[in-house]
Image (cartoon, rainbow, N blue to C red; front, side, top):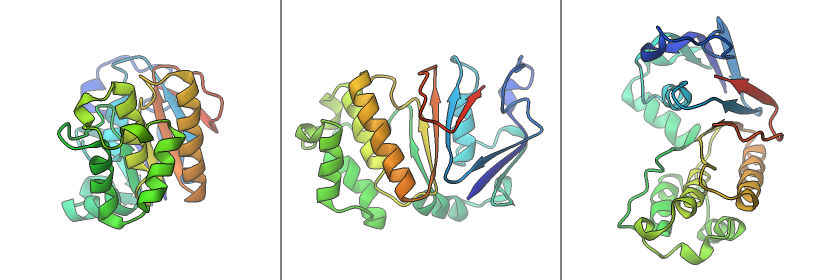
Length: 213
């Protein structure tokens, strides 16, 4: 899978200063499956907008976005649904967990769509991130950092060709950040998938490409 961005920029940013951006100032830019990308920028520079457009949540942009040569602007709801089910996973900045469900129930809601992971594999991933002991607790009572780690596990419970992660380490300490990044890259490599992480500036070195917005 390949994303190609051609003169792409969110409409709210058209009149803003985007000088120095690797993406908003590019006539053409591609994200290639199997590669890892760290997109760094301060708040308000369009990190969430970029991922939202790539996930089909926003169409308020100038230019064009292509998935394998197909113009995403013309995708219908069914085409985006299939893409999100089988090709692109997303770790939302706001996490999008249901507070009244346990962490495990939140994860299983995703996993049951494709039955991609066994429950043992889910528990093993949670143990790797040191949150297995919280799987049966309601998500709403967990700390934001614990919830972030649960959201990471949930995002890995589907087939994907790209994983989009919006500041998914913002409330995680360095030890658990390292464990989470190792898990994500391991799963991405296993699926030969691309991984795009947005960050305020983590200075992570494990990425093939470092981009500025």
